[in-house]
Image 1 (cartoon, rainbow, N blue to C red):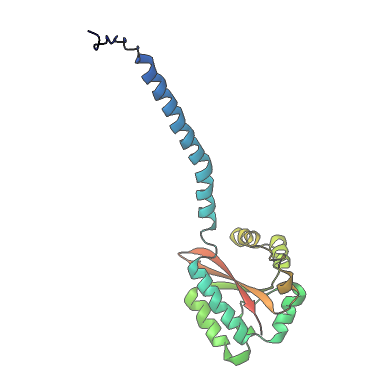
Image 2 (cartoon, rainbow, N blue to C red):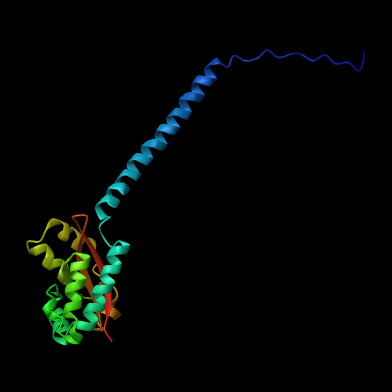
Length: 185
């Protein structure tokens, strides 16, 4: 019997405790992942809920048409006031004296439920300071603090041709806000 080898059978190890340990490790891993998701995802959802009325596609479209009205209807004097103050409230449609735009402005405001239109310089810092120091609604103050100051783009600030138009409009009885860049030629 030279070719036959004896194979010793090994006794199986006791693995009853290994399954319990494996279950505990996997459970701790899954709980850690859920804790990380909870602490990181819910603040993001809260930010979304807070900012969902800011600069939506519909708001950007409304701000675009407000920009068109501003470019076609405002006189040079309004832009001069905006340059000196940093902003000007242009919600009153009687300010649009060029090209008989005031009727267009009235229809635009009524159709889109626009309550406020502001023209600011390219840097919105003076506008933001004004809103924080005057009694405005909390929603509008929150939006003003949300928009950037645009102060780093010095070529547009010093050019004197770049402005921003800020629009407040109502949708489902909630105020929504949008901003659009305005470039004068």
